[in-house]
Image (cartoon, rainbow, N blue to C red):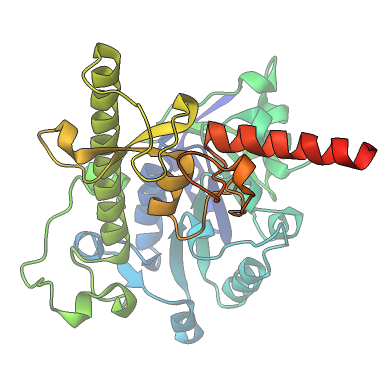
Length: 365
């Protein structure tokens, strides 16, 4: 792969681009390249970032925030950066991305430079590829790139031996220009001094601080009432993330409790003799049921149930294998359940089999 030099050598053609695409897998340095290009365009025009999760930090660096595409109706001669456009302009059921094509057409007419950075190379289809004139390819898996796409052709043209072994360091990228093919090749860049982990992982919760004005009763922080210009600890993503953590902790606690019961059964401290609800004695379908998951664990909180009774406790619908209760004559009644037949009872099942055999014999006679 031919090394062309530093990114400053192609500054002029970059500033003439209308639609720029940055492609690469997660953690390959796409965001750092975004800010390098952003600093270039700041010398020429105003730079906006679409729905950045940390607007205060970005505004300190001289960037502006765009909260909706409707604001573009009154804008001209700016630079718009969209990180991970599939979050804001999704493609459904494999259809062509018409929203992106409309946005690209509007940007070309109003002298707006559009910079997209995505980790999904499939986001740009053949229809969208016709709008792009600047391609920045970071490290990615060549085999996962769609066949016949521009990205795959660029990598194939610049690979010296095997394109499937394509790799790119964080401070390097593969550049291609639709108008000037002689500039195609590998370039390197230096990260901006202000670039740190908080900008690299803007959606991460590690560098997150709670808002001083947040209260549980504050309606402005409700999940359904979040507005774009309110950025604090109660954003929708943060609440959902916290709920996932709590659910994970709960599941781990349940697993720990189940493991403890299994050890007690192996040691002989707890025995599965019969179901406490229906009296079933089949060991293969008996399950230890936890009345409540409390610490420390005690055997008093455990109840022995069969599968049918256990599912009736946890679910409103009965267990799938549970048959309807039928009544039989005196000669075929169970000593435990009387005239009713319980499917999980061995004696009931044996009596039913005996009843069917006797009926067949009578029909043969």
